[in-house]
Length: 179
Length: 213
Image 1 (cartoon, rainbow over the protein chains, first blue to last red):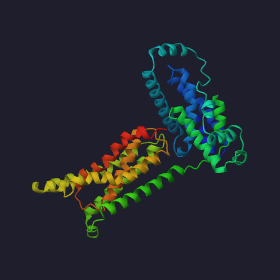
Image 2 (cartoon, chains in turn purple, orange):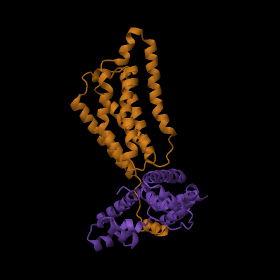
Image 3 (tube, chains in turn yellow, red):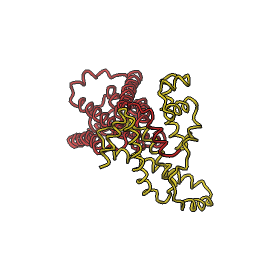
């Protein structure tokens, strides 16, 4: 059903079709949200943050997808890895935290309008160094071409591409709490 | 940032992705690590002088085939563990087949030998140094394998680290076999395997720390 369609969109995206890739990510995020809502029933606040973390991870690791491989297996393995990572991070945080925080989170969890992510990626993006932040802003947010962004910033086209690539990886590292 | 905005951000300026890139990186790592291992072995220990004579011995080819089969199994395991969701069934079969075959041969050799001769079949002349040397020779490739894995996306970091150690150890054994004079299956089945297991277990311990993404 959905699998073949999504796989086709991803394969198109990997070949350079931006519209197909956009549809892939959009439809995938709905699937991920439903999947994570079931698994994170106790902590619904984390769902949207994890959806975003997964989208970024899948984008950053899209070169490891083998088109001969079932898409479900690939996405599921990534989702499970990030889910386990999140739960491990949380348990470590809870060990460190005051038991009073536990009570606070009890009330926070009753709030069901968890459509918005709590973590603001725009803020994390603002913390990146210029050589990564500017390429992402010009190319990925404003939609300029690599050549235009290079002209605007005085960086070389390859530095723009590397900046986007490394910046999105650095963003993922910030989410993990490594940088 | 809302999820829709993130989706647009990621999809904007989408270029074709080179799907061969991780394999290319892996291939470069394999070749470079093996070349350094060869250099270390030849400078430190030297290719043994009797190698030309051994080429006619069937057991020499058993040893080389064993090391080569383990190396291929290990290298393919690294690629599988680097790709999220790859099935691991074939990985275990490829690793187990040469081990089981060699151990069977070792058991038959020991059964057929008379008792006084068995200790020699097991310990040879170099049992004390063999495993440690294999582990040392495998180190450059081990580091290269871990670096290559960081270009993939291992979702089982301990197992992926172990596979990096296993691949490096097996290639290390293959390289060391050009120096090592031992040919008896019982010797190989113990000391070579132990030499491979040293980087394998180090890799399993390092994986969760160095392969996070």
